[in-house]
Image 1 (cartoon, rainbow, N blue to C red):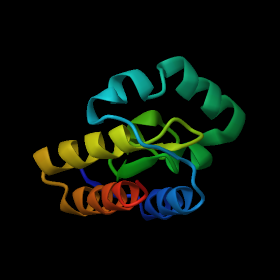
Image 2 (cartoon, helix red, strand yellow):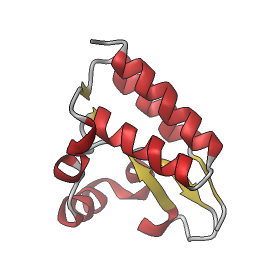
Image 3 (cartoon, rainbow, N blue to C red):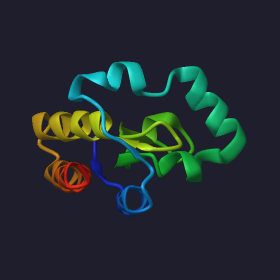
Image 4 (cartoon, rainbow, N blue to C red):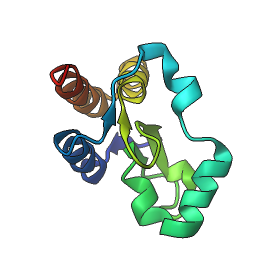
Length: 116
């Protein structure tokens, strides 16, 4: 599996923080705040894979671009970036040794913590 940083999503996430479109939540809240499968499917139906991909810090080049499997490490709810999602992505990327994704998530984490 070749998973790497989705630069477009990273830039989009940084812009969300700059625009004040974020939620400062507890690190353990991601299981409650992450979009459900139904919400993912509804977003895909309305916006397509190009917009969907901007909400995922990782891309898997081994999976076709027009599938959910292509996108890894979600960080928001399709409206705002969530601190808990960023922390989850940072932790999982570190565990899997995806250094570029871990570094990007750590940068976003710092940006979000700097807003408080």
